[in-house]
Length: 392
Image (cartoon, rainbow, N blue to C red):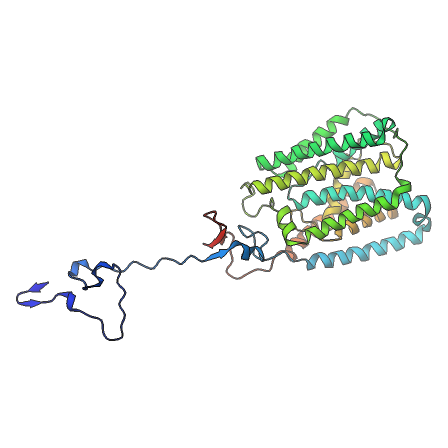
């Protein structure tokens, strides 16, 4: 640009020695800015996006997409299970001092069968709670299965048990698909199942005496051992990162109405199917195999006991989090307390459930990952579906 005889072109302006100039537009970089009006402020630098491989975050996140960073802390479960063990030993000692005959012969077999039946109901609740879809149909399904096997046992115990188990498994799968496909709370869908199961046996005005000849008392020790082993295996699996993340996919982390994906739907469907089948097995053990008349009265009480024992064991009411041996210890403790003080049946269930709710708050307070500075929900997300989590 020239004024009179003087050329003030900016093309002659060069940087000082040692100074580096970064041009916004590469076109005029060779000769400088030919016109003053061509000068533009450089655009602000774009925010740098940091990509973190998903496999890296998987090692330290229980829910890397939306949940909290870090892995669930198991120490609170171990401490609580230690307290449950002490309580079980104390109640067992009191029970032995009051009546030592309960620990031998037919009385011991009867107690072990009761523990096995309660353990199956507690396992049903444990599995559904870990999956984040509590099963309220446990008691009615157990009652319906017990009545069916009690009525049809004279035609073949195995056939009656197979029919009851298959019906419970199919019904649980339907409930699971209802929860997973519609993405509705587990309690709402399983309440439908509870009403349906109860409707099947509501016409039974009197308890049904077992018609089959099989009794579980001679096999009480292996039966109780099998249930205890299953409880320990579920606890050990739940303590591993992979299984805990898999079974806890349905646990809500922000808006509960947001879908958690197809994998979560499949997991919750299978979990509810297994839970309902375990409930049926528990009902059969507590009635037909125990030589006890099967009626409709225990339905609500068994649901309360099952959920109460699982919560008392340290399984969170919110899903995913749970201990190792808690279900086994809590089942033994509740059975021992019931034999020691003989409280009103519904009072024992209500007390167990109430204490279990307090344990859930303890687990959620001290079992969640340690807080990280600067973290917020949704900080990492795979927005492009590339398998790489980007920091937002």
